[in-house]
Image (cartoon, rainbow, N blue to C red; front, side, top):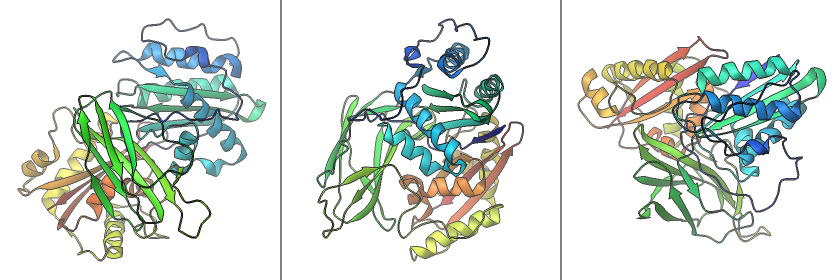
Length: 407
């Protein structure tokens, strides 16, 4: 049985309803949509087949979530189906960029996503593996929505699931070219303060002013320069700032046929600031060199490793792996400033936190987030502490990365 996990460090999610229906065949589990906590699970089919297995898995997982309602989202089901069909054709499809593209194709810009996929046989075994995965990595960790697809192709079948934590809802983004300076509107579901950032071509990150009226918010994305842009929304919650939405769009050059903005899912790296090509990241030293490579590309001063920040980062990385939650505030841990001061660093700090399948993937995910990239290439930063922890008690294992930048 082949299976993979690509947890994203980003927390929160935003739904962007698609304007057109997906051409994919509809998944067979939409009657389970919006099932409330406490519903009795359906009886397990004697043989797990695609028409009933996905519905049973969703009902079973929802019934085991005791902290809050875990709802079924039909758009997530279709994204899972889309992703599963692509994986059966080509396993290399299972990357962050592919996952976000599959979500975006169904009108979603979910930022905190934990995906799961298993390919093989029999389906009963794949279903049991998903239940074990959900128990270890999903339940009681604040996820709000899920979508599961089961594709029955005999000896090469697939079970795919997307679990997300959704903090805001966004008004629909048109699937046609947009005019420059597009206004984004949304509603806060959970959390308080809102921050918005846009990453312009070349890696320049700009903080955007956000206007609030109770739970509703709006901001304008300036789009004067041709090329790829990436927008990110953060919400302050009990876990600290969480990324609630992430999506990208392309502004064609003046010579291209289209004069507006073509929306698309986030892609790998901006055009100038990006991960150094050909560098595999396996140790904290490799990660430090990758950070220095980013700063060199931006003509920024190098950072110095700080022993106190290293200590604070290593301790919190262990706590992140123990909780299996990528957050800046965990019970009994305090915020980044408190943890840095406790370790012996008294000046202001910023922090990046990531959970991924490898150090290389964690770094790539951070670079693709405008707010985290902003910390990496902050000209005011002088020092850095890096902590890495591994959780080998679950399969596949994950790494937890904490980067604390001293200003």
